[in-house]
Image (cartoon, rainbow, N blue to C red; front, side, top):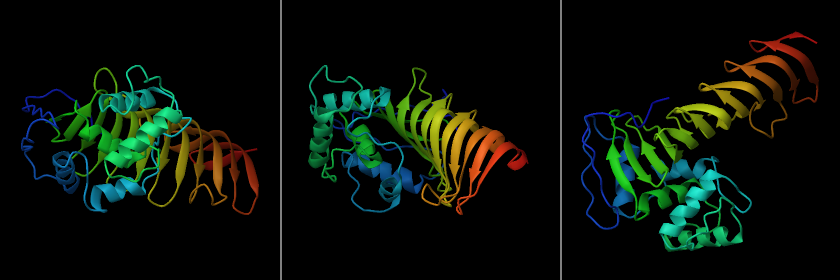
Amino acid sequence: MKSIFRKSAVTIIVAWILFFPFTTFACAEEQSTFQKELLSAINEEGKLSEDGGLVGVLNSMQGLVIENGSRGDYVKEVQSLLITESFLAEGEADGICGNKTATAVNEFQSNSELNATGVADLYTQFVLIVSTQEATEYSDEDDALIVKSGNSAVVVWPDNNFFIGLLDAQDNIDYGTYYFNTGEYYAGDFDSDKRSGEGTAYFPNGDIYVGQWSDDQMSGTGTYYFGGTDSGEYYTGEWAENKMNGSGQYTLSSGQIITGTWENNSHTGW
């Protein structure tokens, strides 16, 4: 996975989104489709006019959502952005999404002409980050277009990969949703810009993996659903280097269950 905040000699362009005219984003390569749409969204204070392209992808993704009952640092960060935009009062960023936060999200969505559900889906997170008064915009040595507000960011690379989520103190990807231009995307923890910790991967063929990651690979314990969570076929157990390795249980769609040990995706013992 690409590092998005490596220091470089690239000129940093900073624009206060709601107060100054947008400064043209300059990069060595031609801007990607998604980058152009992100620039358009900034000009329109976060709104994308067409239900296609980047917004179409965002609306089709499951990813990370913030809803009543959600907890954690990312919830606190979103609450901080809602405070900045005066949808929550000072001191209400506690990392717990309750009725007050859900109502604030609903009001923000209505104000932004989004579908008002009270659930902060990926599109709502996108609009909130790029339209807040504290947002700054700049580029990096990979010609990524970055819009950052607080510790949250939207990052779009020239190859149409993008990230929406939380950054750590060193501006590395920490937690959020990363979309690959292959159609695969991942929602969860990161470490030094790599998938590490707990997370969920969604594959273009409908497969889903939910579990532990290390160094950008499925590693530890997790469940892999073949064809999605409703297919009836899945493996739950130990993983290493993106393969079934260790103890686990494979359930077939017929209901047959195979337990035992696995090595490189093959059943090797009972």
